Image 1: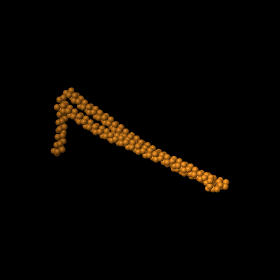
Image 2: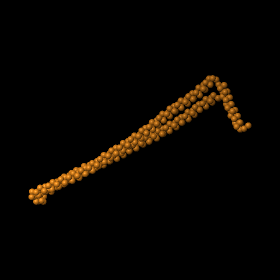
Image 3: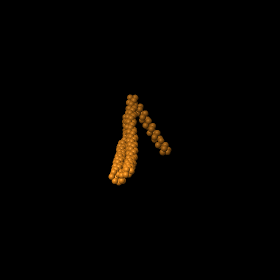
Image 4: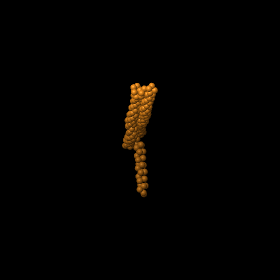
Length: 246
């Protein structure tokens, strides 16, 4: 006889013996014992099923919490991007205003120079006309009124030209300062939005990590609960079987 045949015979004999013992055990118990044992087995199974349902329900709640945390994280990331973008737009607007102020400063300087030139030219022409008038009247050029009046006209024109140029320069300086203030405001606004967005991103990252941790712990808790539930069920069924077969 081969070894396989020997092993097969042993297994068949063992199962047959176990079956005979079970049949004999059933025969030795009353219907009350049989029904009672059945109820114990059913109760253990129902308890295990209820525990598994509770575990699954708790797992679903924890997964919902994890998903909610992840959704909040994503919303905060979008808010951070929008906040940073808003800072960029404001900086662009401030830079546009600064460019306008620089252009105004340039125009003020040019206009002041042109106005001063026109005043000087008008004064020179007036002085020349006065000299021509004196000459036509027979007044000697460079003496008395013929010397004083033209010089006064030119001097007064020069004062007016200087005042006009200085006024334009002061206006240009104000526009230049305004342009610098716009640039500073734009840079500060952008920096503030970047800082705020960075803080929001840190919160979003923390929520994302918390979401992953919550989901992982939920899975671990479910696995541990299932293991414990299965062990409890097997222990209960083993105890019932031992009482039945004893």
